[in-house]
Length: 67
Image (cartoon, rainbow, N blue to C red; front, side):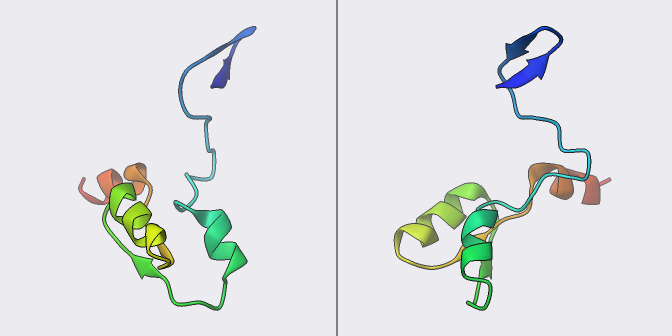
């Protein structure tokens, strides 16, 4: 949910400084641990399920680099 005028609508909030890394809270909690940088949230989630710290780039970051 995000604000839309006087109400709300479905969607992500705006991130004026860019969208944060996926699973940033887990990265911050284990700042000195090795971390895998993978393609997509599904891969990061699958690794997290077996105890591996992983993240992925926000979609906007990937699409911006393709232009």
